[in-house]
Length: 101
Figure 1: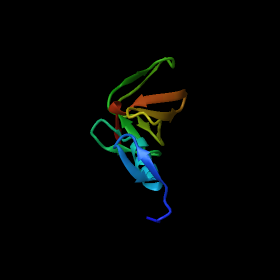
Figure 2: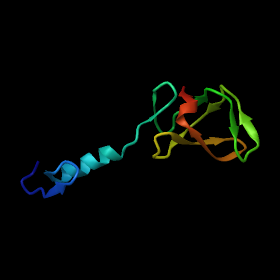
Figure 3: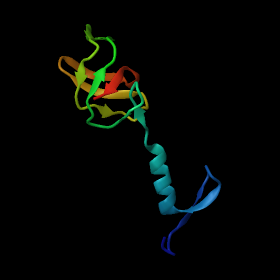
Figure 4: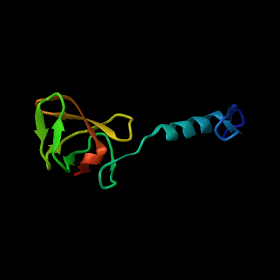
């Protein structure tokens, strides 16, 4: 830590912290852990498998249990993942219905 670091008041802890330390602390708080049905941590680009049949609202089709979804994208929500699947535009699945491959 340099002697020239600005100190900022952190309202959450009630302490004065170096600005760089507070920025790192806030960045860590913004990271959302997304876990699949069995507790595995999911990341962007992971492939997942459906653990049950899911009716896709608006698409008029059902994705069957065991369907492989490649290259997911995290949305910042702890339970929602953005997916691409042929024939379905803008597919968002709940993490509780998938298992990491």
